[in-house]
Length: 420
Ligand code: AMP
Image 1 (cartoon, rainbow, N blue to C red):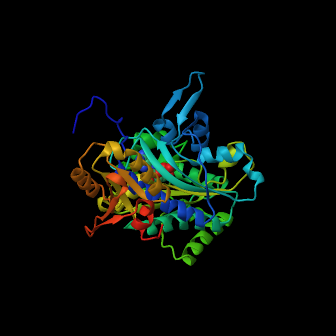
Image 2 (image 1 turned 180 degrees about the vertical axis):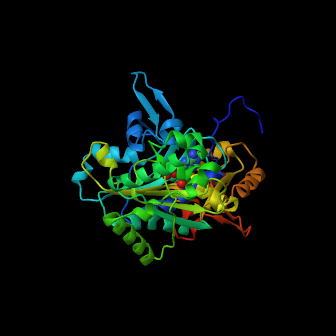
Image 3 (image 1 turned 120 degrees about the horizontal axis):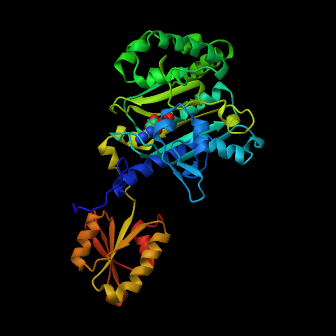
């Protein structure tokens, strides 16, 4: 490998063609799952006003406190590379008056996201998520349907060893009494908590459940659990999400310690984990966020959604899956023994083949005919059209090695056997 002075920045990576094919396959599968459920694709900018994330994701979260790529533009405005997709989509929902459309508005997205985290396997500073948001529905059916989409996608892709964990945070109001109880428990055991958790007892006590600090974990083992404190409509909602998942045949584990790294969640939260992944075991997750649209200036609007990491999906699928590209049915290499003179005909035939939907390539490196055939084999051509002086041509089937004369006017039909 040639050593360059320049390298991809820490925590980022280049997607080379083989990996790009595996990604495209994941994205195509997701697009099909989303479309079948009536989720329509949207795209928002890669950067937003910093305040959107501070307000939306929450001041006390790790994302906002430590992980944002924030910069000033030339007008002195503070902008941030998006660390997540839900706040931007809710911003777009409000900005474009989507609450006036028939509800819910069901949206999907895919793209790069940025968090200044400590890089490790499955954790990057630029990563890619795909996800859905169902905005304007408070029904437990919306939660169960959204969860089902991620279950379907992972099953369709054949991701092994997946487990769904389910929890509920209750509504904001109902949560307050529990949070006081939790704070009291944390304060009573303050000496054993990590500094990070201790500092956030007031602002974000739930995060203590997520700590990898041993002392904190000990304290949390005996902490009161929110799921046990759910009442009224919160309890009913959770109960119904569970029975709908049962009805859909989607297996899950109730996880009473489940929390998420973003502040906007209410009621349902969930996480798909995979035992093939190491420390970063979550493939995707999400939940309900009934307060976010209103917090961003829209009308009170219930909503639910999730995001999954494309890199984590690919890691869980393993190397062998990464290599399964989509071999085109027909991949034609147009060869000739006199490139210069036959170039006009070469480019015309390439066009004809490609317009008919076939993959078609030619030699761009000045190889001799023998070298061209070798190259065609190397790049996976199924057929080689060999142009000859005087307008005749041969068609070689690369699998059988058979070669015969063909009419140039019917090259597409000759290659496809009349199917294209
Ligand atoms: P979150 O937006 O934090 O709920 O994360 C949703 C999903 O995005 C996770 O389950 C991961 O699959 C993926 N993800 C989050 N952060 C990263 C990261 N730094 N690197 C790679 N994937 C990530």
